[in-house]
Image (cartoon, rainbow, N blue to C red; front, side):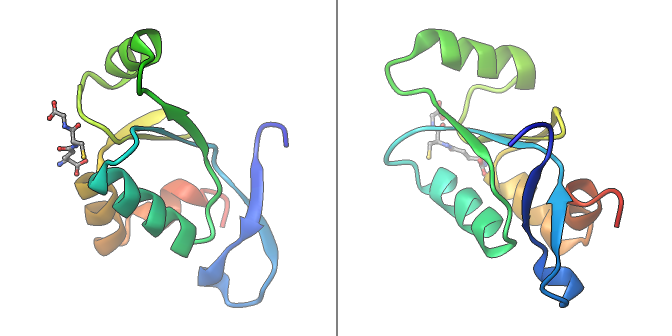
Length: 105
Ligand SMILES: N[C@@H](CCC(=O)N[C@@H](CS)C(=O)NCC(=O)O)C(=O)O
């Protein structure tokens, strides 16, 4: 896939396939917060690119440079750093996640 990733948008209820913003998750193995974040994205039908930081200091450094944070996960939607799992869930609960994921809808 190129700039956008296609997936079903459960929110529109039509079963149509809509493009959503690129989502990138920096994560680590055996990380409960990473699992919670990835589970929510999966529930929303959102596909994402995952960068594992385990044993990869350059990737971890890249994550810290881009996010300003050192914990995993760090999640980016359309290159915008949105924080970790708690931040992702807070955006979802407040209704602000869907517009970030589907800005055209
Ligand atoms: N509030 C954060 C917590 C993230 C967190 O504590 N992640 C752990 C791994 S599951 C971590 O990176 N620990 C390393 C550290 O705190 O330096 C979130 O929701 O993402």
